[in-house]
Amino acid sequence: MPNWSNVVSVPGWFGWEDQGAGVAVGNIRGTGDSDVLVFHVDNPGGENHGYYRIGWNIQGDATVAGGWTDVKAVPGWFGWEDQGAGVALGDINGSGKQDLFVFHVDNPGGENHGYYRIGWDLNANGDVSGWSDIKAVPGWFGWENQGAGIALGDINGNGKQDLLVFHVDNPGGENHGYYRIGWDLNANGDVSGWSDIKAVPGWFGWENQGAGVALGNINGNGMRDLMVFHVDNPGGDNHGYYRIGWDLNANGDVSGWSDVRPVPGWFGWENQGADVALWDIRGDGNSDMLIFHVDNPAGDNHGFYRIGWDLEPA
Image (tube, rainbow, N blue to C red; front, side):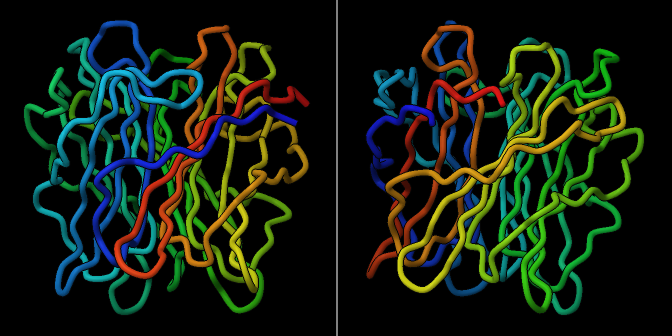
């Protein structure tokens, strides 16, 4: 089993009803540090709103050495009832700066819909130079999603970033997890086409309250592995679980799946968003796992995260 840091609270959280959350780790300022970006969708009366903030220079024990930015709003948000969200970092336009992908699932009448947009060129204050238009993921399905996430990586090996989107559908009975890939992002943030929809086998849980996805090379063979994460909501405390799809190939398929692994010491009866990121935070050349979730006690929500390291390669 991995080793785990203490659970750390993100300071200054706000919102009584969050409806999705995301986390990403990257070298945003170009200093070589690992910076953590947390995101959530707030659900006040009327339209939802998306917000992010950045913790500079996260350490292996999960403390943030460089402090936190102020909270920054994503402009032009829409949707009264979001049902999942996620964020990812990557240099899409070739500027040498990290771009911020923001993703959410909207819940109008009828089918849900997945959308993303890009904040270009994050600077050392955590601000972007501008935002792309809102881009729809075609062929979305599911009337009630209960978590979603995104990840970036060159999956097909042609030197361009690909966009992997993930969601948990909530039909009658057990939930189901699905992902698909948008190939070859261009400098405008558009993809050349989409893979078919791929099911994560052996899903479980009738009520999920957050989910996320990440890409990294966990087993050290040079191929990307796919980590999926979700929060199950049985009677009593929630529980966080992850599993790994090994060796994602150029078609977006994996060679096999690990067993389902619990995150120990979970807490909270009502979570309202969660995500996972993979990054070498400890600087030992291996992927570390950062788990993030929003708890919903009485009063304001709270955001928490922790780091797991020494991930088992099989």
